[in-house]
Amino acid sequence: MSFGMALGQGRLAPDILAERQGVTEGAESAPAVVELARRLGVDMPICETVERMIDGRLALSEAIAELINRPFREEA
Image (cartoon, rainbow, N blue to C red; front, side, top):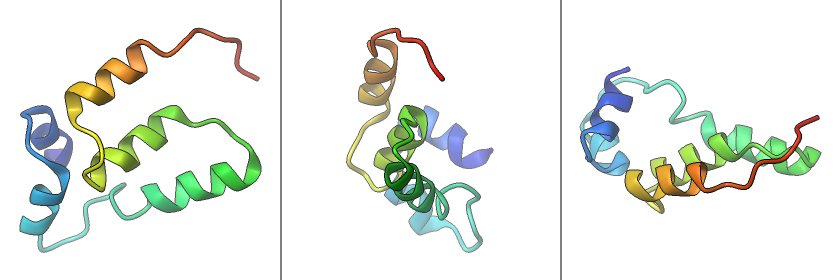
């Protein structure tokens, strides 16, 4: 939870993770979840967004904008 709180305060994921001595749940598994979803053809926009934030490719404000502006569609 503290990882998410730090992200919400505008800190960058790579900086937060560099300070950690233990495992930050989700930060280690996000890339594997996204890769599995891609292989199976499953659209997982929240997981993809989290992965991009964790590896520093996406800022929080950009993540929020992308998810909010995502077109509505029926999910299976």
